[in-house]
Length: 382
Image: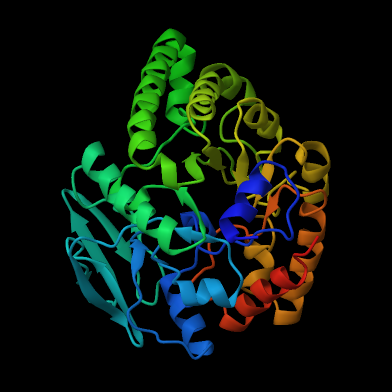
């Protein structure tokens, strides 16, 4: 079974030989460029060049030698920057970044990036930028951006057997699809002007559908998923009330998903962090096919309860290793035990793609990354 077929069959709730494994197929299943460099060195693989494809979270593009080593089934659909430069934030790390990104060193050893009136900062010894989210370096033009992704998707489709998920972060062409479900200001505005918020979301939905139809014509034949997302939860509960989300947001998510499903074979993948247990029924009913990252360390996000109640209706994509409390702090043996426990729950009955809960941070030991991914493959068979 090829990786692409394995992922496609998992999404369609059909039997597969093993659970698929994802490292870096989405910005939230990825790995810090710092940790990625350390992992490659640990495995005796070349450490130059390392391409950063998310310049805020500082994620490394996972190359096929790593994907093959760990039996991964997905690959990042992120075209190479048109023009690039090399940047050395500190020894021994050297990364390839877009030419338009010009980090300037600060007296305390940190870095600042300013672009078109926005700025973000990495402190000395840091692993990612904070401040404004600057990950798109040119004005967004749908024909140009979708054309870039089409060329890369077509290449990967014919040259590899990996599944692809369209995210679009790097060039500013992503889909939102949640219509303010995590936007506190919009939720407050709904008290004073409910009709105005509904009208704005309806317009946004119409634009998202128009954009999808262009995307589907250009990129759709080559990809298996497209991402929507908007973090709806904090560590302890939803950011906005389920009642607000059900009335003002989910009707438009449902309409977007309906169009995607009726007009293509593409599945809808939702990225949604936090304690969102009370929102999962709404997400399922809206027609979302896969939910990521399944933040099992947040309140109410018990893996067994989630799988038991919703496992037959939505694919859980993630939740396979606790990044918040285990991956970066435990021993390799503790990481392996955590993977066995969580994968044993989520893979039951199918409908599970293994990934850790969110990105692998820059200071995670490479031994722990190896333990996580090797154990995932070890327990992957059905």
